[in-house]
Amino acid sequence: MNSIDMKENGYLNNENLRKGQLKEVELAIEVDRICKQHNLKYWLDYGTLLGAVRHKGFIPWDDDMDLSMPTPDFKKFLEVAPQEIDPKFFVQTSKTDPQADMDSGFCKIRYNNTLFLGEDDVFAKQYHRGLSIDIFESKNTPIFKPYKLYHFITHWKSKTYCFFKFRRLLNFKNILCYFTFPILHAFFSLWWKLICMTHRCNAEYLNMNRRMGTGKPTPKSEIYPLTTLEFEGYQFSVPNNYIRRVSDIYGPDYMALPPVEQRRFHALLIIPEL
Image (cartoon, rainbow, N blue to C red; front, side):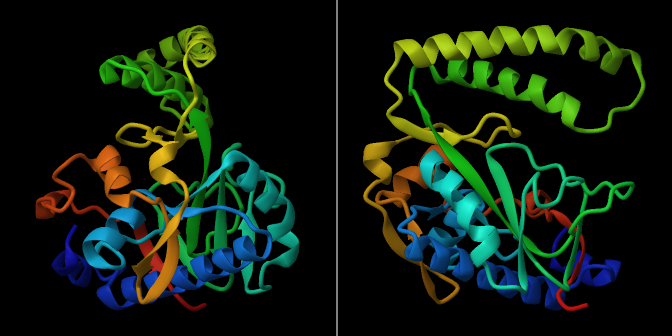
């Protein structure tokens, strides 16, 4: 889907996309305020960090923001944010919104009186569907080679966990997965635990209880101390070597725009004001 398609489809247009992006910047500013007040570390990450580096703001077709926090700061944020956040925002976790699919290591900050409908929304459940930004727990992680082995283990550890978090079609393949994935998950979890015991955890990477991110871990020496970078006219925290972080996630050609057919939106519908 590109900008022309958006206008033709009618349910998502350029104006609402841009209004939604600016609402999400408001959410990020509030997270930044709380983090500064409590001396918590966070940084722009994934597509948002790429947008800051390449566009000084959103990737034009992006409709969400990604932030990461190291484990101690993430846990502290979940303690203080629900009480201290501006009333026009909402901290969405498994505790504050039980019907939402909010596993450990992940939360959303939602904008009240807005609407964001995405491909993964489950309409049989009642939960907050406002515009949001994602905050990921970034965990201590070992770096080891070959990276193909790293990705093989982490991919299957995550895949076998997440299989049970979403509705599945009743077919032979999924029935087989239903019985085999718990065993595979235990196997890959044990393998990963042994690796963590025998290698230094000197990098940061996404909590693997969620669907896996792309790329490879970034050494902590390249992340800390954090610095700042412009995003939509505001200064937000980013890894000290943000070029290394973006390269770790997206590869050396991160400045090249993807083909039009690969420029995907998460949203099916954005209503910036209800």
